[in-house]
Length: 108
Image (tube, rainbow, N blue to C red):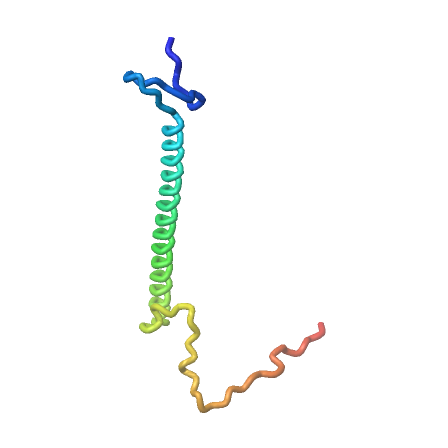
């Protein structure tokens, strides 16, 4: 019966009679495993980023179609969904604020 090579063996003998160490193969396999793990992480990150961007585009399209169906279509508002449009307010008019916005309490 032959002995299976393991990482605990310090030296193996080649058929040429040269003594070689298994330490180099162990380091090589660990380095390969680490690089493979990092590559898999990068692939997962890129795929998640791609799926998220596709979902954002899909949601924006659905919002655009919903606004168009409701008659609230703004052609200039395609890219600025989250920006407040205050351009309709005239700069010359003074802005008034409501001092007491809470209604009076009614006792029942």
